[in-house]
Image (cartoon, rainbow, N blue to C red; front, side):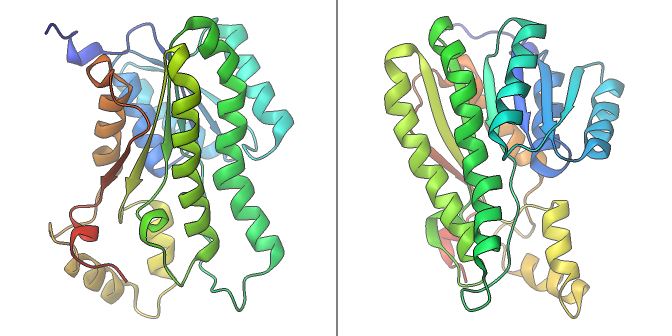
Length: 263
């Protein structure tokens, strides 16, 4: 079997990454740009997008930041329209945008629930719907949805977050079946504990953040938390020609956490 040069697997390809302003989204944007893609990052945080652009610029890649609320139907459609007008195509969509909501059911308000669902799950639906006609017309396209191990096993401390991530897994399966006749592949990635700003904020909210971090890392079978680069490497593979027969799958990337025990 002949493979393309792995250093530039996405030359002349257009990749859209939601939530590209930090964490996993920034890591994905950088990784795709390094392999030749033109990357469009959509995020509510313009400063985060600028920081991502600076990282990519130093590496010689091409990145365009689009500040927008990914949960709003009109802005989601407009963002994709702008990308298509500028590039004429789209090849990969990474639905990464998401927020946590560390509230148990007793204190979880309807507004909290709606905010998490709008950002985490509705945005994935909106952007997938927006690129779908283009993918159908091209008879090719890849959608990669960032779920979580918490969508697989659940957790009492964040029922809204866990429910959205479980929903992303099912949405991915449905879209994979729908898109298969049109050459569209859809997969989900389930990160474990990844060292991102969201994780850092959660740890900083603990009474003793340093102790909480040591305790968390101590529970990791591989002895460390994951990094955005760990997730980006998987996304590159799943979006590449090498993964051409993989669709409707969920890839767990958690350093063996769910192979042992999770609280």
